[in-house]
Length: 552
Image (cartoon, rainbow, N blue to C red):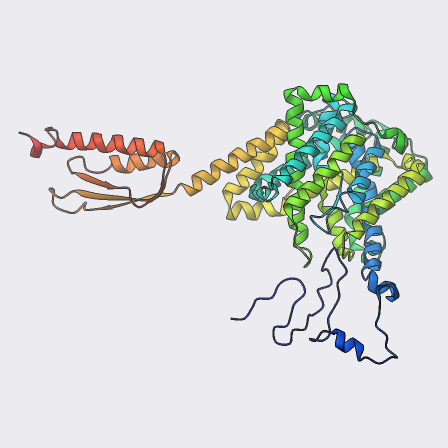
């Protein structure tokens, strides 16, 4: 039997030579490439020429000790440039100081980046939690946010220790896509107001309902039109910049868009809002006793569960997506869940935003040629240096430009291209996706996801409860019984169909019901079929005008 090759370094079965791994192979330790099928032994070393002394680790050139340093360094710069505007934008959209987004990005790089789990995915504040964080800050206050994130992180650590990470792979993809679509819709609706330096009414429905009034108000205000022009220009750069291949390789689209918008506002001296700067250290506000006291309420408990579950699901689904982008070691879901929990615990202690693994930064990390986890650790160091050395640079960034970045990010969360093919091939999955997204817009994040999960379970139960009745003997003489054999899974969902088929059989004939072919028979079906069989036996053996054969 011929062994199958693996996605990583391939070993030639005939010669024993280990071939070089693919360009994007990722490991946590330096990789070496063997060029011969033999290994040196002590006797070989003792007989070697004096002119070729054995090498020692201290005499190895730097390229041998850190073979991927150059690739990881370059990738870390790219990820830093992508993460910087997103960290600030997510913080501003969440209603918290911009520095808190940078703190979460720093923790995601320096702490979570060092921990085992997934080698290449990058963690930080994510647009997917923006709506939930905004609602939490509005309801409980900025001080309590740290307590919520801290407890959510501890819950993630507990789930990872209990090896529950792998179970997140059992969540319906339609629910996850619907969750992201709902987040995208709510995010876009809210950021359209910020795009014109206006204040959003609040909930998702209120924001959508107020859009006509926003259009009228923007048309009559020069300052609002100026802010809208900056935001719309930012979106245009985000869409068009990747098409300029040479420039996109040097400068990521988010940073280019924000930089150009900032230069335009500065050059034209436009009267629009800028990011408010407080300083990195002054933004750190560890939660106090009064903040933890608010966690006893039902609303706070629901928010904690939403933080933990949604952040975990988004991180682990991101890990699965990143694993498809490279040929290195696969993600250990339990360890990655604990790494995310450790990061959120520290973010909670610092009073910062919750973190997740972010697919945008992670894919940029892989595309830039990262080979080990060093790239994401260095990206966290660059964020720390920037926030500590030039915090005033944040104060010149127009808020409308960051809103444009988030509108673009929210649009990318919508499965615009995938929905129509999904509707054609798997209509039930498409219904779950759309219902989850609408439920999030109408209610909130936590309730919308619960509704989506319930719909996914109901859809699965309906699709798996297939029952087929094999009926024979209908053409046999009147004295012969009709044979009915049930096959499949008999649940209460299919009970009306089963009873309708049984009731349609001739009432003047004996019926033999065989349930041995069922793989599953729930209590409701068993009770109903037993009742029907007893009633049928009694009615068949009773003398009636339609059944004279059983008359005395």
